[in-house]
Structures are given as C-alpha cells and as structure tokens.
Image 1 (cartoon, rainbow, N blue to C red):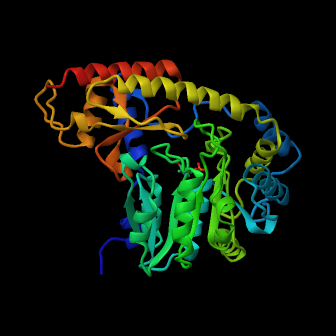
Image 2: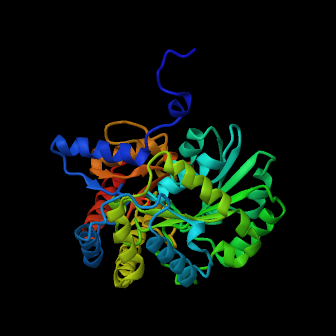
Image 3: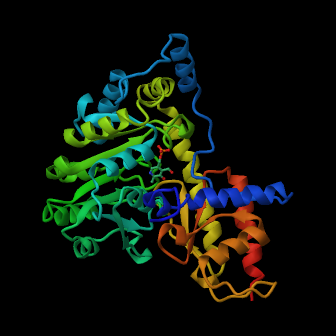
Length: 402
Ligand code: PLP
C-alpha cells in the first residue's frame, strides 16, 4: 500500500501548466523584473456594466439562497433560447444543467460516464485540462495528433484509426484553445461520418469560444450537420469568455437526459448549485444587450491581425492565423538547435519559452503543455501596445541567437 494519503487518481494529475507559467512570471515580477504577460487565458475586459448591475439587483431582491441544483429555471430557459437562437439546437430546460464554469460541466460529464480504463479521444493540441480531467476520472486520455499542415484539426482518417472498443468520448473544441482552429462544415461532416460508424462513441462539443471568431464563416454546429449524433452529444458552453465573466463561474451543458440527470445527482452531492448571484448575472448576459460581444470581437480581431503579422516577420518563427479564440500557436522549430548569448542550446520549446521569459521578459506557454511541439502559445487577451511590445522583445532576443 502506498504511504501517501493522497488518492492515486489525484496523484496522476498535475496543476495547469498555464497557471504554473503565470506563477513563474509573477515571481519574476516580484523580483523587480518587467514581465509582459502573454499567458493569460481570459478576456482583459471588465464584465459589462448591465451584467454587473443585474447581479447587484439580484442580491437586493434576496436572490442569495440555494437555487435548484441544475440552476434557476429562468437561466436554463434563457440557455435553451440561446441554443435555439444562435445554434439552431432545440433543448428544453430539463436537458440543461448550469455548472460552476464550463470546466465543471466537462469534469462532471466525464465523472458520470467514464469507467476505469475507458478512453477519451482528445485532438492535440488540446486545452490542458482535458487529459488531466480524464485521468482524475480513471480514464485513459488518448491524444490524436493534429498537424499544422492540417490546420491543427482532427482528420477523419486520424479519428477512424484511433477508435477502439474502449473509446468513450471524443472531445471537440472549436474554436480551439490553444490554436484557434475552427472546423468547417465539410470537416465536421467528415468527422460525423466516422462517428456514425461507431455508435458507442459519445461527443463532447466544447463551444466556449464560439463567439470569438475571425473567419466570418457561419456558426455551424456539429448537430446541425448531423442531427443523428444528438442522442450521444453533450454541448458545453458558458459565459466566461463571451461576456468576460471568468470569475463568475457559470457554465452549462445541454444533452441527453440520462447524462444531465446523472450530472445533476453528482452536483447535488458536491457543489450544489452554481452561485445564485452569478446565475442572475448570466441571465442578464444571455438575454440583454449583446453589443459587448461584437465590440470585443472586433478588438480581438485587430490584435490577432497585428500579432500574426509581427510574429511572421521574425525569422525562425511562424504562425498560422487563427480562425478564433484568443490565442496564437506559434511554430518555433526554427529556433531549435540555436544557441543563446549565454551559450545555452535551445533543444525544445520549453527551453525557448524559458529564454523568452528570462531574456525578453515575455511570458508565454510552451507547446509541450498542449501536446504538440515545438510551439508556444501566445495570448492576445492583452491590449495591443502590450502585444506589440511583446513581439518587439521576442524579435530582439531571437535576433541575438547564434
Ligand atoms: N474549455 C476551454 C477550451 C477553455 O479554454 C476553458 C478556459 O480556459 C474552459 C473550457 C473553461 O471555461 P470556464 O471558465 O467556463 O470554466
């Protein structure tokens, strides 16, 4: 028997690498260094005023008590309307659960469905939490490599080859964190055709970045393309990214009744309802003025144009223009094998990232954290002057490499 008091399922997981990178940057700041933080995974805007006001008014009305575990009927009805209006998906309030962020929805979905040894198919580069959540639920994360030449997207052939009798879930995240890759109708159709041949695989669609889009394409959902997948698809979303509400912790899942009911039971014995005040704020976000969504989208687009151009002008690094989300996934293969002014050879992307942090004072996250190297992720959730200064400093220290 192990002498540790900590359960094996927790010993298997690690803290988020982006939090670790942010902590390292904070430590250097404490030491008096100027650090340009391009690690951030959240909007740099404040939550819009009308949403904050709704929270205040809810408190004044006394909405400070437990709600139903699955969330207030008003919020679940607003989510159902949102899914109908924006995604052309029909769900009723019973098929929806409000959670403490989209992260909680994904964790609970895996917790109620994954048996020990079940495989969860995760296209790489992936959001760092999917593999660790899978491990925490006794599952086996299976990373499916998506190359830059495929636009960092899962192909039908890779999916087909990866499916086994133990495959429980496929997690699709579009637009993707960290690459910004967004699936087209044709690409979703090809994946749907594979999935139709494998009825035991469930699909978790993580739509959290759906409104941060740069490609002007229609917002087409996998379930619009193949409604037959509906009985085994869980749609996950939330207000964190779209409405700059990361701290309010409101996410949700919509899907088959058995999964939603199981998530409700688990939630009733763990967190109970998400914060009542945050639910009131999320209701205002979904039903109120949507100007913030278009305005912030325009700002992200300007930053993305600027950053892609600035990075691609630096010899040795290159970057595909992302279709959405607020990250760039930067190819740094041209820096591997080069030598720093202090004589250190950069053998992998983690060393490139350390060099950028220590010599340029620019904090980014290494591609190894997201399952595809040699790359680094650079956030554009910072104002354009900060992004410009970051790119300028990166260019300077790259030019100093031998
Ligand atoms: N899904 C992806 C791809 C994310 O990048 C994040 C947050 O970084 C989440 C889900 C979690 O969002 P929330 O803050 O609603 O828990």
